[in-house]
Amino acid sequence: MATEVTVPRLGWSMEEGTFQEWLKADGERVEVGDMLFVLEGDKASQEVESFDAGYLRLPPDAPQPGDAIVVGQRLAFLADEADLEPWKDAPQPPTAPVSRPLEDKPADPKTSQAKPARDKKTISPRALRLASDLSVDWNKIEGTGRGGRIREHDIRTAVALGQTLDPDDSLTGKTEPLSATRKVIARQMAAGSNLTAPVTLHREVDATAMVGLRGQYKQTSNPKKTIPSYNDILIRLAAESLKSHPLLNSQWREKGIFLPDQIHIAFAVETSAGLLTPVIHDADRLSIGKLAGQTTALTEQARKGQLKAEQMQGATFTVSNLGGFGVDAFTPIINPPQCAVLGIGRIQKKVVWQEEQAMSQERLTLNLTFDHRIVDGAPVARFLEHLAVQIEEPPEWLAY
Image 1 (cartoon, rainbow, N blue to C red):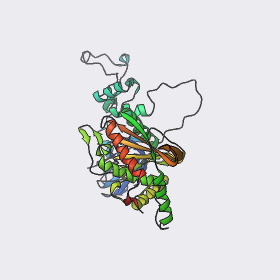
Image 2 (image 1 turned 90 degrees about the horizontal axis):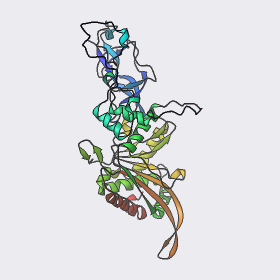
Image 3 (image 1 turned 135 degrees about the vertical axis):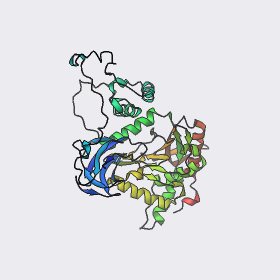
Image 4 (image 1 turned 180 degrees about the horizontal axis):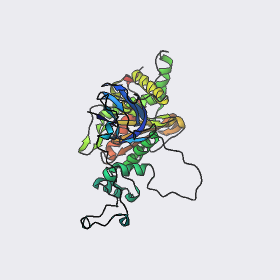
């Protein structure tokens, strides 16, 4: 008996992806655990293994490289060697009902009292509520549910991709197709703005001691070891502050506020494919040297396009550093279901007045966006205070 090959869910936020290639040929024998095809989703490409054995049979509607596919979609079959066309005996996947014009339908007195074919769009209650909250005209959106039903995911995707906006036909130019990575980034950024209650606090701190600490790293570092960057130092200090302020490390979930036991920090990396966010797991337990080694390796993998999906999953907090681009203050966007994201500005030498005396200091701006549904402003201010104290007076355990 043939079994279906379907699209698995690779990450908590993945609903769709892009089919890249088959790793087995049509008709080739497949064993349990063999890598079967490559799927791009959640900003990374991943080989998908087979959970069944059999001979791969590709139906006429099998996806081609570059085709969009959704979770649960049937792609192919694993069948017996003698079963060459298993799709002929398989139930057809659901499709949207086709409504014929009334004048094309033969009159039948037996069915004249039957309900007319539905030619209006349908929408789930959750999708309708979201569309109302975001002031979206859902009649413009194509649904991906059974029978073309519009789901909550369809509303979010349409908003993220700008499909609910009327185009300005007076403009001329060209359209650059959206890559799968850019679509994921767009959905996440739209969700961070539209599905949370974001508030951003800015705080300028004295980074003079931190600058001096990094100077010591450069002088005493072993040539075989990675010199920690300012971003490494700030990730490690943020992890330490999260231990004392766990609400900033929490997540908004349907059943309530979830408080993880772990502190996994994602950090933003610019790549040719777009912004990627590899994750440092258990950042609060790492020495600054080990943390620096991990960030360096992950950054290199990200820029070579070698990150695996699992290396960008499970984050409980995010750090985004734009200091290298000369940015002082900005408003970072939350990555749901996380509670907060810390934005790092550039370090800039300034003259400040302390006790009627002018002093030269290295100044740094911290920008923290948080979900006001989870935590209020005062606890967030205390988190920033804790982090600021560590930056201004680096703890001894940061020695390298």
